[in-house]
Length: 110
Image 1 (cartoon, rainbow, N blue to C red):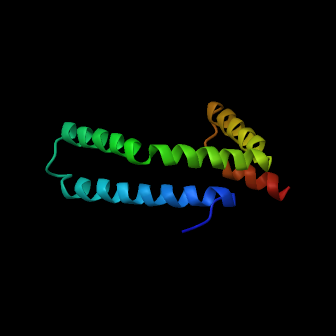
Image 2 (cartoon, one colour):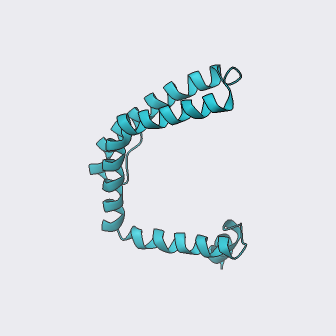
C-alpha cells in the first residue's frame, strides 16, 4: 500500500484503504451479479443499505484519516493553495469554462 502525505497519517490510510476495499468488494460483487434481476427501486435500496454499512464500518476511520491529511496540508501550507485552486475552478465553471487543463498548461508554459 502507498504512503500518505504525512507519516503519521499512513497507518490511518492503510486502515481506511483496507476497510474501503473490503466494503467495496462486498458492494460490487452482488451489485454486478444481480444488476439485471433487480428493479431500479431494489437497486436504490441496496445502494442505500450499502452506504449505511460503509458509514458504520468505515466512517470513523475515514474521518480520522481525513482530519490527519487536512492537518498535514495545513502544516505544509498547501491548504491555501488548494482553496485557491477550488475557487479558481468554481469561477471557471460558473463562467462557462469547462477546461481547466488548457489554461493551466498555458500558465505553466508561460
